[in-house]
Amino acid sequence: MRYRVVSLSLNKLRPLNSELFAKDKSNEMIDFIEKPMEGKNMVGDLPITTPEDDELADLVRCIVRAADGRKAENIVALRVSTVSTLTTFVVISSGNSRPQNQAIAAAIKDDVSNDFDLLPGSTGVPEGSAESGWMVLDYGGVICHVMTPKSRLYYNIEGQWENKGGEQMDLSDVIIPNTIDQTSGVSPAEGIEEDDPFWS
Image 1 (spheres, one colour):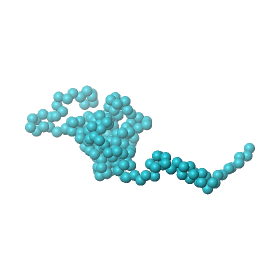
Image 2 (image 1 turned 90 degrees about the horizontal axis):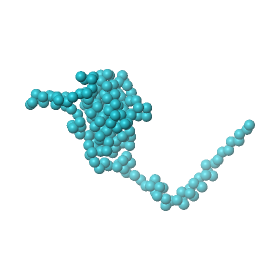
Image 3 (image 1 turned 30 degrees about the vertical axis):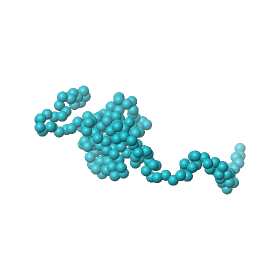
Image 4 (image 1 turned 90 degrees about the vertical axis):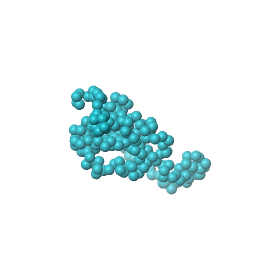
């Protein structure tokens, strides 16, 4: 069986296309496409609320609470929706060992799954590994990074987002301080019952 190859000349199609566009020049879509846009409008609208009142703030708090429960250090949450179309929030935390980073990622995955019925990424498994020093849990609107201090210092993710205009979310109502109140001699975490047998 023989096939015949037919080639079309693009020059023959161009007049037809230009005629169609000339007729539809008043079309709103073409006007929109041809209209120049300012850089700040290309990423997203300016938020009308603070990061603490954002619609994704509860998911961020859940992630931060889970990381803090596994003694993650230097937890930072940045709203980056004004400078990125990739996500709305970036949460960054550090663990001091591979097992701790694995425990932080597992606690985040479990708590978000229980409270919001969400799993990270398309596979439900965090990207990266504790051995690599950097794990990522992608929940779409919130991307969570669990890093070793060395990896975090090297990549400086929060510094890069802050330089581009990321807004830091106040987490003081979520994170339990690890210090003892010197005036009363009582630890701020005293009286909080831990229901995890790992810490008992």
